[in-house]
Length: 172
Image 1 (tube, helix red, strand yellow):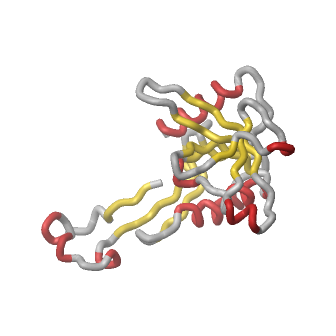
Image 2 (cartoon, one colour):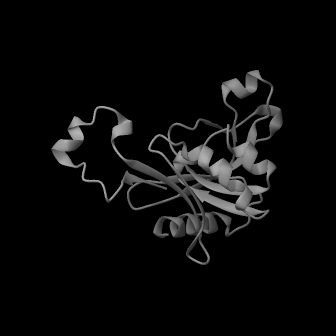
Image 3 (spheres, rainbow, N blue to C red):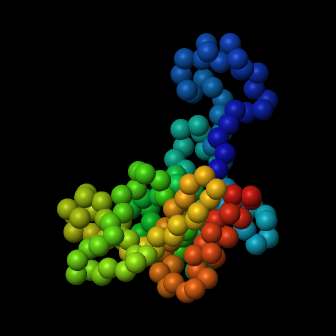
């Protein structure tokens, strides 16, 4: 996903300070689905500087084949969006940050070592079900990166597979 100034625009440095409204700064929001195996763009959507990358993703999901695996950064997290992906048979591996509050144990629901649930308070009040996810830790030289995936079936290589897929998405 890219957000930046139009390269043809001469509004730079001190001139940018004069632009008082965001709309006066020419900007473009590009949401791009990248096919990791081929290394080519799959589909994209353009928007204004204040476009919602999450809304773009939902509008692009129809271009994905069933049982696709969406790999995304933390900006694409959330209970409002993930159920829609799952309903359309699109699985995901998404980096999570501190803004996503995951539950480890839901009593009668189930407790597994790598299972977590996303169940925001507003969803629970509406009696919407929790989302069952798998949490994957990817150690790095600085600190761990945490991923959640809707692919629940764990096999011995699954954590390293999630790590590999996510790393490939960063190189893109």
